[in-house]
Length: 457
Image 1 (tube, rainbow, N blue to C red):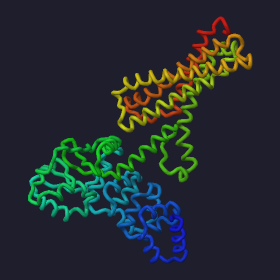
Image 2 (image 1 turned 120 degrees about the vertical axis):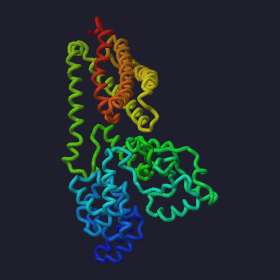
Image 3 (image 1 turned 90 degrees about the horizontal axis):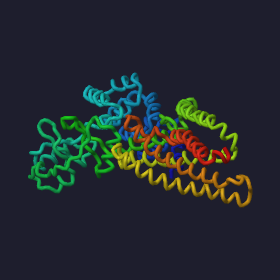
Image 4 (image 1 turned 60 degrees about the vertical axis):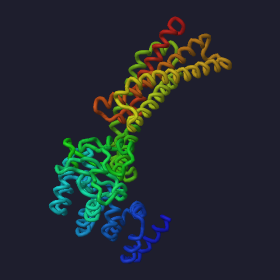
């Protein structure tokens, strides 16, 4: 279906039939037009300019920022002014927040005085705060209003509201008292007072809350919108679930990049300049490289022991990778649990106890497998010599210690970073693996010194 749409649009573009192109584009789903822009980015400005203004706004708001920025630079002035004016306040704030200062200044001039003040007010909140997500377009009523009056108010002002699924009840000072679903109002007695319909089960967000907290609140409550209040509980705006879904996707993508050991990309991978990719990746690689240098330092410390028992070097990759793998597993599980709100800093002792037990169990399984591997090889070769059992016990004990240490490190590091105010995702798999690599060698050769001194060492 999408291929048919692209072919038809290309035909109309070749014929330069703007009238038919407008009719065709206006009949498509918003998602189909967005796909067209992805497939034919060179015609993105043409598509937005050709669409009716309202549909152009709906398409523009779901595009990624680099595409939006490219369109803004080349869109004709009259269409640009209409587009910026019709963008919902929350989407406009998100756009302005991404643009550079001079570009924002040029666009804000296009807004009426009231909308300009509103945009500047929303931009005054911190970048990752709920205030940046909220829209002031909502329906608010007083508790002493009748249902009839409320419905009349909705008919008059509902068109300009982001959503009318929920109506907010405030007092004369603007303090939020409760919220009511529109269904309850429609089914109530027309003469009933709104205050009689409230249930006092209000859930709200603070304008200063971090956006990740808003994601968790939406996840735990079946709401299409939530009210946003200040410290005095005055209603400032609402946040709708569509904005939360966008933010959740961005947070997830950013965490995945960090877990992989790179900075979050500002643009789609294929649109990112090569030098931009280099800059995003080189920082972490240098940090990890210096971390791995400590591995060489650890090896130098045990250089004499390795020279006496070269056989020990054969198991170094096995020991190091097992510790890194267990650490990466643990950090990924804890980071995900923290993102879902299942684990907090206060749960650190519970997490540690669980990882002590599970790490010990995992280490024992790998340690037994390591010992059995050495035993099996002795049935066919004499590579480990007469002291194969001691070597097997050394490898087995080392695996238990390394896997246990990897599990503890991988689980505790995200919680420690969160406590220090950093992003838990920064304790990425490569970072944990690098840290565990160094300590794995120390554990391995310490066990070897204890068990093999006087025998092989």
